Amino acid sequence: MGSYTEIYQLALDKPEEFWAAAADDLVWQKRWDKVLDETNSPFNNWFSGGRINTCYNALDRHVDEGNSSRLALIYDSPVTNVKQKITYLELRNRVASFSGVLRKYGVEYGDRVLIYMPMIPETVIAMLACARIGAIHSVVFGGFASNELAKRIDDAKPKVIVSASCGVEPGRIVEYKPLLDNALKLSNSEPNHCIIFQREMHEAELIEKRDIDWHDAHDRVTSVDCVEVEATDPVYILYTSGTTGIPKGVVRPTAGHLVSLKWSMKSIYDVDPGDVYWAASDVGWVVGHSYIVYAPLFHGCTSILYEGKPVGTPDAGAFWRVISEHQVNCMFTAPTAIRAIKKEDPYGKLVKKYNLKCLRSQFLAGERCDPDTLEWTKNILNVPVIDHWWQTETGWPIASNCLGIEQRDIKPGSPTCAVPGWKIDVLDEFSKPVPTGEIGAISLKLPLPPGSLPTLWQNDERFVESYLTTYPGYYETGDAGIIDEDGYLHILSRTDDIINVAGHRLSTGGMEQVLAEHKDVAECAVLGVNDQLKGQIPLGLIVLKDGINTEHSEIIEDVIKMVRTEIGPVAAFKVATVVKRLPKTRSGKILRGIIQKIADSVDYDMPATIDDPEILNEIKESLQKIGYAKQ
Image 1: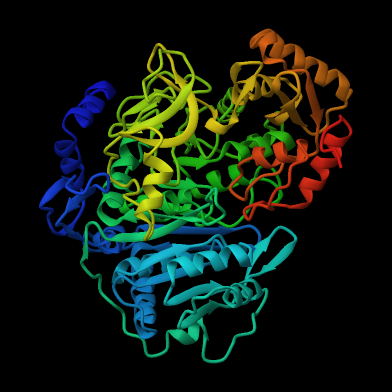
Image 2: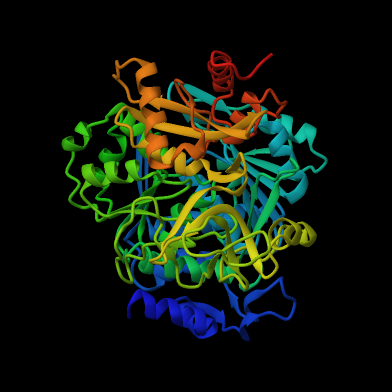
């Protein structure tokens, strides 16, 4: 196959040759006319002129090649005590049938279908059924607030909405139907029908004529075959929060999505057809789209669909139980999930209850991974722990240790180097690369590789304004960091988390890395707060591991000394406080910007993605005790 350096250089020098070879690993109805079409740059297209189908490559291909009995999905739901194993043939048949349901209710090629569902097999079936008939799906995280759901309905204008009666969280039922009904009252776009999957733990009231029960919808339905679609057609729209409050509809092109994800399974994750792959995420996020539903099925793997939490379902050994029971070979989760486990089981005692010899690698992504979390995970699992970095917009990893090409040395705190196909530069404010080791804006050289967004849904202007304007010739990632002397990338923070302390540009992420090294700290956040003298100073919030009895003042004194020693007095890190928990999005990202506004007594809008709004009151009270968040 060649070394990482050789393969990376080939992708850089001869991208069309490189990606054409990767595309040959898929089944096409018509080969492309042009690998990369830049005639309408910056709205570039990969594999233009080609015709292909996502669902065929995910399901029918494996059935046609004699792998009907291989497991496609293992559904494991500790919150409902249900487990199901679904073969490729069974999944293909159920998807083909639901494709017939969509057709029955008027969904055709190019129409949108909004999916508002929990982590159940029917969600995967609905997604693949859309792809089967050339409809464009837009998945919205189940339980999302009505006003945010309404915005997505207005933008996508779905012909049909597929939902469920409820989601199940530890200790509570989340009713989806009232949220959906309210969203439809708020929106200006009305679907023809809503298809509702009734879960046995709660049955929703259906509105006559508009709402149809999932099972009733299948009456007198004929299964549907795969439809050829244009390589450049969108397979889905995934909304990500926008700074204006209006969500951005990230478009995923069909062929680029197929080619990049299929290639990534072996090259990055080093898994083979038949291996068991588990991305512990949610289908509402890009990780769930790429690595629960699509990539594992493109590659002929068995994918785990997990309806549970890292802790509390029933304990901090939940992940290890799933790995052992289902013989998972490669796992992918967010650092915040690992920190939650570490907080409850700091010495990894629960790992010893399970046989994890099947596990070959553990991948982490979704937010910056501090070295302490990575080292702890490595020590308890005794497998390579790979931090890698990507975004909703890119759809697949930008930087990673590519285990299927060549495992490189692991540097805790770094996602290693650019994945072949990506060119990463760290730029200054004049769009010039900064010297090695200096902090700047992490940017991606155009054209972007297959699978990344070609534009935003029906908003080319906003696409250019949001991503391509600040650094001409580059895509703006919004992340800041450095490239070291070995070419390793280090993500330090978002560009808006670079704080200016008395004229010095400092990364709050670098300070968080120091705080996380303290033996009693489970997780932490550092943000810049206003200061009359220095402009900004850093403020640290720390969550302690369970069972720590040391005086809080002593721990705070320790972490202040650690930052002073490792970063220097220039950081002016003098203020920290212990909090019970940190406010996060449902995908586990810490809401640093909101904490900053609370500390500075600035008004803010309640984020739609927040996991538990009550945490913000707790944070405010903690900050008031140290002189911030003034009334």
